[in-house]
Length: 334
Image (cartoon, rainbow, N blue to C red; front, top):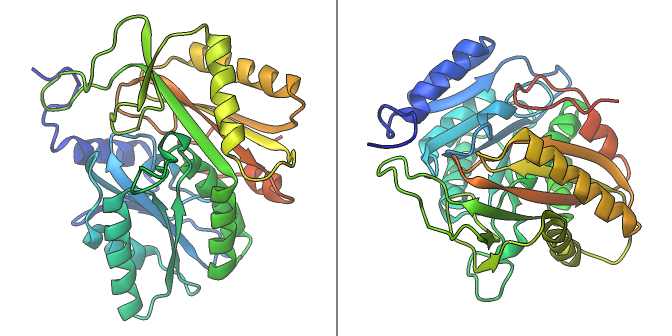
């Protein structure tokens, strides 16, 4: 019997979305095709923001629908890209006079289906563009055909662009900003226990108690490296070293630090990790301008965490701290 509390794994996402909409009655749930949107966008917003991807990463993306973040989110089945019809209909439902911007994680299925939807929107006279998020340094290799995967930096892009959209930025300005935020964001994830398969109840992979996967993916992909589990301080130091080495340029811009749980990691652990990361960065002479910690981009019930760093340009911090009604966001206003 499957270990996850899903009566029918194939229907789990839709049932969960009904529960989400019941809890947040201002959210609009459409079931044919399946997507979530809201109609409380700021009157100054000229461009709609739409994102999506496979289910199993909750609260991403539906938890970030709300004023100040996404206009709509499009969930696929567990770890499967949404159909292009879902993306198209969601985008049409929320499109504004200035067009639609798709925030897309760098996975083949997502790129294809959002691309088809954008072509269909263009045929309807709705201007659409795309920001492709590719922050995972674990797949930054010439041997990887698709390049860096899109992971936790996605919510940083969604938050900053949401605030910029609310101030009235144009589609071209938002696209350029989103690509710049992505270019200055890098992440890496580790896990001590794989996620549970929704269908079989088996773990996606097995690890010895003294091992961890270094550079694990958010769909249960094994990392390219399994390592002996070091003390937490050493692990955090290594992760930060790899992230900093992958960030562009040698300048020391203020940093945004995000520590994200992968599903089964406790708040106690995450807060300890973010403190160790902050101490390490400070000791190295980096300015930490903002911190966010919690489970935002999960991999079902994987026991692990990711660290993301974003080099902040002028004005981004104000966008980061701008208010939002997105239910999964943890308030960072000062």
